[in-house]
Image 1 (cartoon, helix red, strand yellow):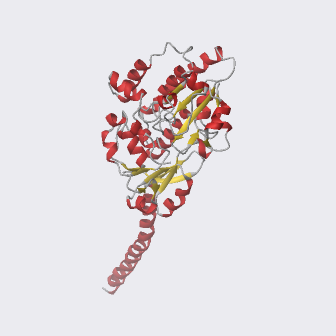
Image 2 (cartoon, rainbow, N blue to C red):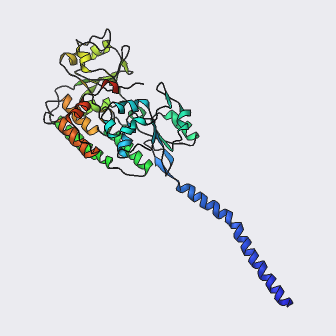
Length: 379
């Protein structure tokens, strides 16, 4: 009996030790599982500058601060989906409201821009939106956002040292969006389409160069007090280079110019961006601004003043319409080489292929001759 009791006690101690050892290991096992789970909840995005950013795998709330066309590009990338975009700039909302984009994604106009006051970003109000990720251009916002625990991902722009090509920039944005959202999109096929368009345009230009390069002035801003041209770090460099021309704004030491400078330059062609509400008629009729006499400018005398179209976004910067913008710019600047390009047909076919939209002639007219209300409100 005594022997039996000793035996029972022995096994009790052994089993108790084994059980106790198991209990000691449990916190370590739980901590390890939690660490693995935490790691699985994020992934790394490498931005255009090579910076690594940890972003959540589950992204339900996105804010797009810039560049300005990026919110519409993201919408097209998501095939029209906007319910996970919770914040954009007021200029993005305004541009969408007065363009054909309003037919593609009507709910876009309901996205909040209330975290801007008078066009200025209020970071505290942005943080209240509790975004999972923020796309940005202005590097000054990155640190405050990350300090608030928000994943901030940079998008490329020539002003930050990136390529001036709208198509190359569009590809960079889409690649970054694909990394961030962990998905591919049919919209990425636009890049290959655009590369073919660019190749054909360059081939024609190389065969038939002008005796001397066209001097082109791109007007980015025009008010009663200010005329601004697109400078070196702008998409104007690309557009001029595409046709073997000269971006006159690239010669300026700063964006702001005056009529005296324009008379000195004597541009062959003037392209007004849709940031402004001015039209070619304003220059032809000398109604652009008090005291501004355009009558002695070669581009005006030869009726060579044009305004960029506005489709899914402005056709000047990167947009999912960039291949169409290439055709339009080439045909407009060199009609002798591109008379075979029917923009009405090109636009209708493109919008059907990439947006599944059937456009009317009135829709095409809306794109090619944008409304003044679509101008940029804040600079």
